[in-house]
Amino acid sequence: MRIAVLSDMHAVAGTYRAALRAAEAEGFDALVILGDLLTYGVDPREVIELTDEALARHGGVLVLGNHDQMYLDRRQGRTAYLDALPDWIRETVDWTCEETDDARALAEFAWTQEWVNGRALIAHANPYAPGDWRYLAAREDAKAAGAAIADRGLRWGIFGHTHRFRRFDEGDLSVFTLGSLGQPRDPLGTPEWAMVELSGDRIEVSRRRIPMDREAHRSAIQATSMSPATKDRLCAFFP
Image (tube, rainbow, N blue to C red; front, side, top):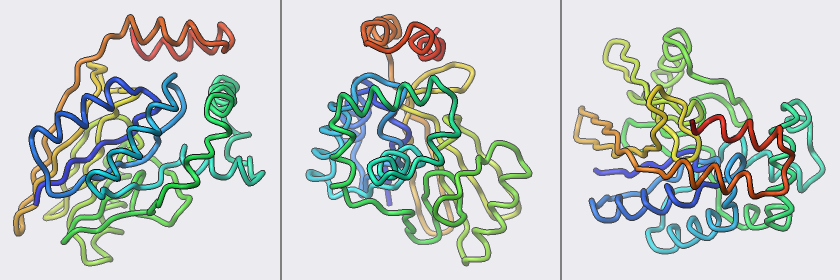
């Protein structure tokens, strides 16, 4: 079973489009879009369109991320999560909503909280309850997540959210966090997706890096109507 997993697109259409094309060229049995379609980037409409097209073409799985939930909640007047975020993120959200009619299209997608295939669990942040967005940033976090996965009779967990690729092994359990297509935070800062291969009692998670024109991306951010401070903060992720 080959599963193409694309995570944390964050409104960057170029890398998302390239990843979809690369995954299609390589071939897969299932496509999982692991949430966080919007915020930070400046191509929200294009990312929504690419998602709609990919789901229609491949019947993929669309997993709900914290940023997706945030936009859905905002439309319903529930802003507690959003209100607790830094000013620059809130401004990015406001700008995104202006560009996308309050992210209305997100409400039309068929979201799922998680997806289980065989003994593998795939979710945006962690194996816990919906609305729990704790990061799996350290070995202790991964160990606790592994225990929760084992309690369900599963063996592997695959998550996004951290924007960093890591693998944690504990006995016969493995927990993976994947890199981001929209705002990579690993030392190389390179956008990436992952190919997951499941075969019996074996799992292989391979990184697939995507080139990015950072200067063009920074220029696109600077061309928006967001405040200089917010634009500089967003550009800082792409030195």
